[in-house]
Image (cartoon, rainbow, N blue to C red; front, side, top):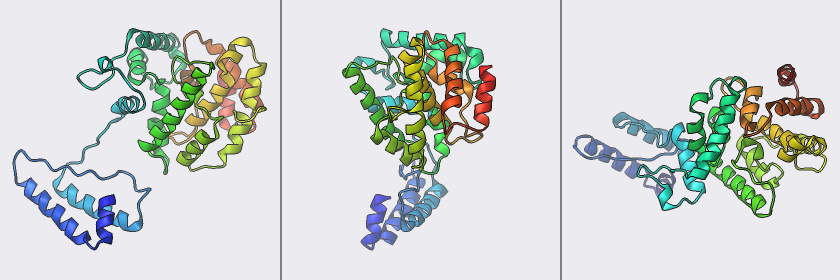
Length: 314
């Protein structure tokens, strides 16, 4: 579309359109020849003239062509981890997918075992019996990190499925690496609750994707970003197991991510929160304790979700 826009400004719009039309008709009558035309899936960054041309070209190409989605949901995780991390040549299989080493596989198995042991407490849509495969497919991310964008955020008007996610995760990974290098807590997987919402730059990226700047007060008041943020304070006052894992803060972050978008519900469910927080040696009872504390103390957590959390905790 960028090329078409430049051609329009040079007075070549009709010439370019006619050329592509003639080319598509010629290819249509030939064997062993394929014409590939790549056009964007999002209209967010187009002017009105760009959008009009986009519709004209799409209509023309659809008449003789076959639409193909370049990446499916199952391939998204592979694309993301190949783009964000460097892998040894030995780690890449002939199919282009990453083959995990024993250490990484052991980590995935430990998380999968927790899910299997708590199958009655996680969402029914999660493939519990194939949990190991699910964790291996998204390593070093927890599956919930990537699935939340497919399950919920992709319905948001301003959400950018590829560039937006990559930019967000790049900042996320960079912060996780810096914290680990500085001697901070090292997570065995990058979980949904580890999103660095205390970083103003990361928060701005979140707000851009959600198209909602007013969340700043909710995040810094209830989750993190200030010394007296409710979840941060509750972690400091909690028992050692909760304090060490920063479970209040993680739960608050998960609720934020899971309560935006969604084709059927914009609420974060308790099973979703449990699955996102699930990790080896985690006492699921601590999750219930944390949720009850959050709904009691947080200012911006309310409505029916609070009642559901209290009922689940009981």
